Amino acid sequence: MATYLTIPIQNSPTVAVEAAAEIDDVRGKAIGFDANGKGVLATDPSKRALGIAILSAGDQNRLDGKDGHVDAGQQIDVQVNGQGYALVSTEVKAGDALTVDRNGCFVAASAGNFVVATALRPAAANTYAYVQVTMYCGAAAATTYAAAITGPDTKTGETTTGGSKQ
Image (cartoon, rainbow, N blue to C red; front, side, top):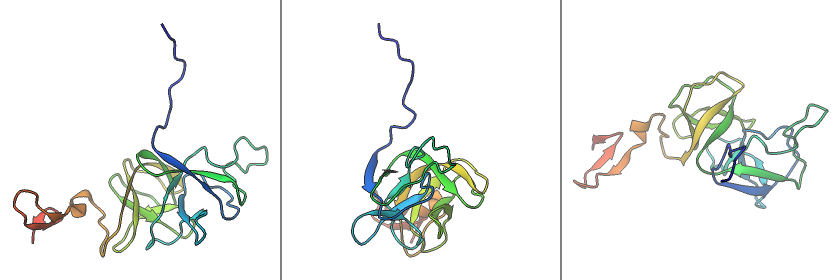
């Protein structure tokens, strides 16, 4: 009989992208693509992001305090689906739809923002929030699950927005 001493802590799908430029600390930040298809911090809340840099992305166990550092050309491991951790720059509540700020960190989304993740637990500013990667955008990005339900009812064919008939 086999004995297992460890279990994986993260089995969500990830992709590896080449960094377009140096990033001081990529861990838990939103990653997008530049015009050449290389990875950059996603810093525009109106634009699509690829996903979230996993917490083990970038350099690890450095003695100079620069864990998470990535040089241009180095690999960034990016979570594109599932649950993980995202660095929030402001306090968030469980259920908040999250978008990016100008530093690649996460904040509660406003109307018109591209939503990258949904907070599954509350988190204080400048900490890691436990999130579900949930990417969508629209004329008015939803900030609650009920508001995100939009489209034809599969039984009646009537269009619904936020769970109410139109």
